[in-house]
Image (cartoon, rainbow, N blue to C red; front, side, top):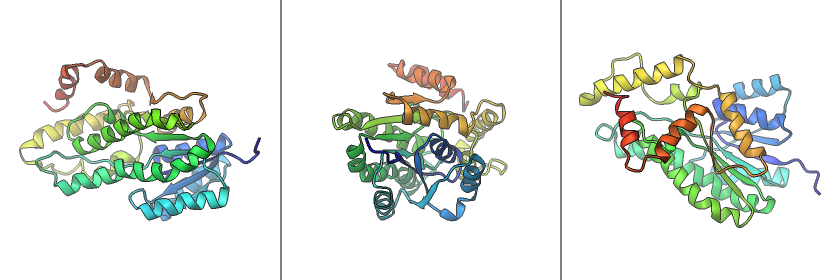
Length: 281
């Protein structure tokens, strides 16, 4: 049996779940390739690794650029000789609604959150087949339940979950395990990167009142202790990485399990609509 350390590549590691997962994987003995679009933003990652006493292989990878993805994956194979797991974590939030968003805005959300996952997964699969590896993707409870003013984001996450749910049995025939990890609210920089200044006056035309109510509810969720830490969410990523037979769908908290369960038991859609309508009215 080879003594070569198992190698995992993780995207979107500049902060949040990706950073925490990279440190946790390295602690667990994995050779961890921590990637991010802009390596000048790796200071927090390097500090966390130093404090944890672990080494990370930090590389550039832009999930929306196929050449960047190929270069990163090829570099891992050239330098480490194998790839045993991929964690698709890179993503971008977006608040908006159809009448106000441009189609180009929506395409950009899909490019990062959906096509970015496909770019990385496609490049990695031949190498994961060689090692009987694992393809893990951080999605969201928003990949199961559509949420007001998250139309483009949820559409992208729905697409990821549908694609991977369909791919999973196919990949399994060749020894590759596919899992999705579904966090709810996570106290990370993600909420600060959604493109809305919550302290400024919101001008969403006829939707302004509903958007303000949605934002107030969401901010309260992040301030009242409901949101879990990035390190806690990363524990579920590690479950997918380390379990003998990881589940396809893994929620990161009891709240997320209950929330997702609402949708999975909601045959006519009334339960979800009844719930999410209260967020904006």
